[in-house]
Length: 280
Ligand code: C2E
Ligand code: MG
Ligand code: MG
Ligand code: MG
Figure (cartoon, rainbow, N blue to C red):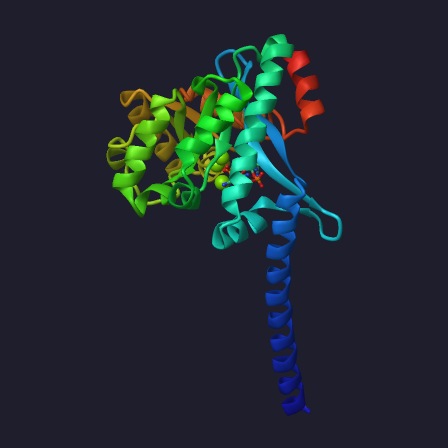
């Protein structure tokens, strides 16, 4: 009957919701274990000069392969890591590993001798970790100058405690590091406001690149971001370039650096080394 079908639906709904909760709870426990066992790795996505076509840097992206779940997307576990505080040990390990690998490539691969690495840092790390000490340790452990490291943060990371964040940015800059604003254009802060922070790089969010050939609005937003960032002496990166047409359009608009599947997907270390070999 309709009534029992309805009751069934409710029961199913409750059961499903419950299992989702258990799933998330398990994921946190599994993530904790994976961090302890050092099961997380990094993938490296090339950042390409739109002027020369050369790889000028890579972005380090966290990767987790779980024995039972298979590949888990960072979009799923980074929020859990942020809520649980696990982002602090995860982020420390990522910074340390990224710096170690870059130092090794700089020494052993000609095309990598002045490459940089960009590492994502969460707002939670700014709050809960002494991020300046963590960055300093990662650099000195690898024997790298601060100028080799770019710290990528999103707008949401700076809005909750701007005074403290401004001070942290200045201390990171004193180490020689560059600061990049990630996914720019998706938050609410204006460039005029961002200008009050020592930001070196603006990464235009991939949604604008995806829309630029079809939508005049996206194209206008990109042009506005590029002219303002030029006036503020910031380097610009376009995220999510997937086609040659997009690459040509964003290069013609005057953007400095491109990133996206058109150039390369996030790569394992051996694949990155092979790619660097081709580009030298
Ligand atoms: P993000 O920092 O904005 O990284 C760029 C994302 O876009 C990556 O997703 C990358 O794989 C994807 N991408 C690159 N090129 C293309 C393209 O041409 N088309 C499309 N559709 N996507 C492209 P991924 O690796 O899944 O990472 C998602 C997000 O997770 C990152 O966004 C970042 O916010 C976060 N994340 C990843 N690793 C870390 C980490 O070590 N620490 C922290 N705090 N966050 C991380
Ligand atoms: Mg990023
Ligand atoms: Mg991004
Ligand atoms: Mg993103």
